[in-house]
Image (cartoon, rainbow, N blue to C red; front, side):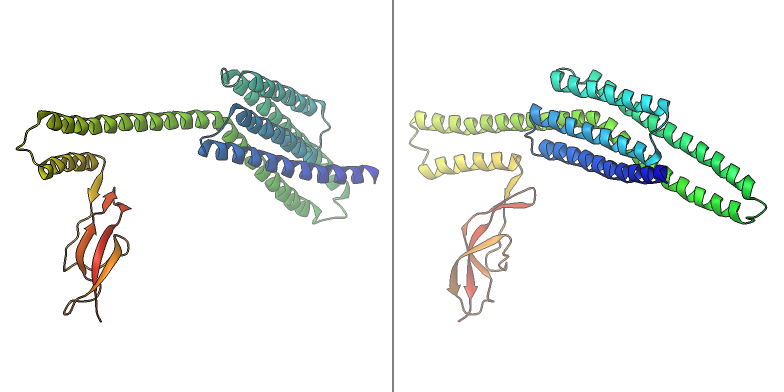
Amino acid sequence: MGEMKMSVSENRMGVVLFLSGIALCLIGFALSLIWQLNFSSTLFEIRSAVTLTGIGIFILFLGANLIFGLKMQCVKLFFFSGVVLSTIAMIAFQAYYPWEWRYPCVTYALGILSMISSLFANVIQGEIGKNSVDAVKTESSLPDRTFLPEREFLNLNRELEEKLEIIEMIHYKTRDLLDLPADIKNYHKQIRKMNEDVIDRHDDLINRLYEVIDDCNYILNQNDESVTLPQFAGSASTHLQDILRREGIVPIEVTIGEEKFDPIKHEIKKRVVVDGTEEGTIMRKLRGGYTRNSIIVRPVWVEIAVTQ
């Protein structure tokens, strides 16, 4: 009876530790993703996420082993070897990241594989021992219990399926954890490339704007009286419009007297009473509007017709 109570207590403790380990791992993954998506991850935050996830893995595997029973020497050896390797990996990661992260990751992976081995050895040995006990009980009670072997087989099959589901879940979580360093490295490469593209486009835009300024200064320095102010302003406007078109910014076309007011593209600045014209018709464009890649950058200011 005492052994049964102890087994139930260890089983409950194992479930609590297993769920707590999963929660810590999920928190570590969530924090790392949030910091990466906000482009603000520091060395302290990255190291903290790795440490939190590592502690969650320790607790997760300890809970799983307690569920199945942590009694065999080989199981204890595998488990504590994995804990030692993972602890060394976390300490090395804290000390050497980001200068060196490959060797800590390899040590981390070996520690996790060792803890997985302890879980597999525990499950297999537990099932072997249970099958042996069930076989002895079945043989001793076979004359009196005709239908007991079939019932025990069904119960054993159901329990085995539940444990296989737990092992499969642990396998998927471990695989995602091992893929995490490569995913983070690829993500950093993408962010670096995006930043380089933005800098290149920014430099190109500045060069083209300075070309317009150089043309304006050239015309002003020539003192050519044949070039009027409207011509000068029109030339500068044409150059600027060309630069905007290269950046994907195009003006919004408006058909005066025919097109109706569209709240997405237009903004009403004035209303006039016009007889014989349908209400909401655009009568005049007061200021131009622009779109960039089909997205409204600035709406058109319009004057619309209303009825009395």
